[in-house]
Image (cartoon, rainbow, N blue to C red; front, side, top):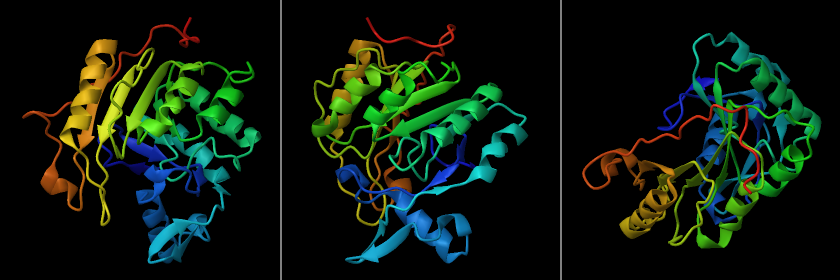
Length: 258
């Protein structure tokens, strides 16, 4: 675990490491660069996860399961928001269902924490969590990444998955997603890409999502403008920061929408 500089969470927890590129939002993934850096520092968990191709670092598709990391949340006494697998995807096809169950058990045993799980593989998430064999947990938020209109269908899959809180990360936002259906979506995070080859985000695209959040009653969180120097571009939108969070449900778990 590491205390996180990610604006919408408190800490990261990585029982899985490694991934592969599935859509354009993955092209400049910070986790690929970080995994390569950690491997160069001798961190065994990240060995063999990346390679250099065409002048950039890319995933190899190798997935490492960190069984020892499963115990980490038990040691955190203070409640916190925890981003699960910032260096991977819990619902990656190469993560065994049995290991997902182990992660789920830890989250069930540590209900003082709020776990935020983000995936680009919502169909597998839906298939696993909708079969009745995973307990519904009020402290687990489920989200999908959507970088362009082509991948708005990920939100449809999320809607079909039982979850206490459903959220969408529009980051890196690469084009307009005007008209995105945010029905039964509790939270939207919006951000521009950052790093050495960052692609540009247009303010109009951000405003379209913010307006949609107002229409659907979805909490709006603006993470960053991004760019090569994200500290310089900052986080202000229309002269202020937007750090809204969803209201945590009182029920054990929100069911599928009617």
